[in-house]
Length: 637
Image (cartoon, rainbow, N blue to C red; front, side):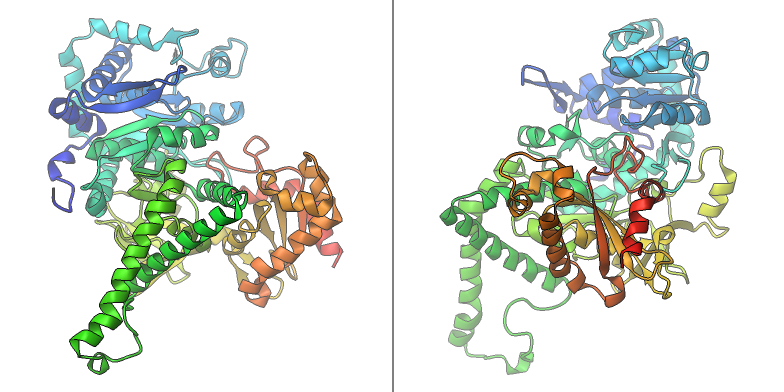
């Protein structure tokens, strides 16, 4: 196969049509895998996948689902989630995903705003809330379908209802979808970091176009492998949709389902993904686990691992220098006409060292690094991605030293998930790559990143005012992010416009840049930088109990302790303060340094409203919840 994914994979204009294509071409190939309670792997073929989608779609039509209706899905990741999604689209209706962690109030808002009177859900708690005749949704819902079949209408019952519907009726709906590919197929409600969530309308064409562009841009990698992906981020998140639904239906392969992100460590060795997308927090957790394991290893094993990682890191840094135009071999300071021209001398100075480096790297990988990757479940990993938030260069460097090159992607729900992708061959750390094919980028006069192209949403659902603020008269979508483009078109993210801190001295500070340093400190889990209209910067920090051995030792604890025990101990604060100076402040300009901090006993959580369902900081909520602590940070200095 050539470096570009074959075009016949991606010609159709809706996801159900892509699925039908695979069912026809490779009916008996495995498409979806789940883990049974016994530990056995249960698979669904492409033909079975398509038959299930058709049966559910016909069942929905039999119950009276009309084209243009909105249907919500509130469930954990599983194959049935995607069957229902594609069935809703095939029937001409629109899917409204809801985060599994959403509160009753959030669910009620989304259902009412989207006018969704049909809900497909799992788990008794969710079904009970939706079916409660005395509850706030009483009388608002027409149908509740239970994926587990414990109550309400089960998925099997729904599919049996469809037996009365002729195939021609569904085919007519599918043809109508193809004819109206610019109609919304998906409405994803944003996390709402600064206010009420907005419903982003994404058309069938948006979805297939972004998948085609990602497949083509990463063709040099995807053409060499069979896609095996692990679906573990919520399917209500656009990034998960892009990589385990849209892309899967574009290039084929298999998707494995992990219903609970807390079980990711157990599911990775089972799935052995060739493609894996992680938000920065996931990569940081994996990094912490590897570091802890290396530190607990015997001195000889630890030394061997450090040597292997150093060898691989040097190879990776050499590749990055090449990507910026610097020649990795030979002395770049010597002009070409002054390089030795004798064959033997050139061989000794250039060829032999290069061969030696390759042999050493091969040994390091075979003896050490391959075993680490196998333990993680990454032995077959060919494409590692990070998105949804900035990731630190230190984390990228760490995984590069394990032989895992993380490719950064940048985008938002309003751009169907992806605006830029780093190079498949030579990602440049510190940037999020270049614009997706077909997408235009520009930096506005105030530094805001603006985009235009076929993957942009056309509107926020039932919100014309916000839509006008999002998309200007020339069709440019304003992302709300600040950035810069280099001469090669690589984009660097500076921060969010609304999150920029302006100190009392008039200095503009992007908090995310500083927070990346803070969460890299051993023992720190989360960080929020404070300082808007203040004389200096401070931070709220939470502790990582999984990486707190040194803190416990410093405080003199020999047994298990709570975060509260550690946060109030002066020895712990002294250790964190020393690390903050050495690992954060020394890398920053004076006005960016953290002058004071507070250690919090509780981590920020979705349940308390401090994090969005996609784990982004809700800064206003955090500031309000901890306003007395923040005041003390400025009253004590």
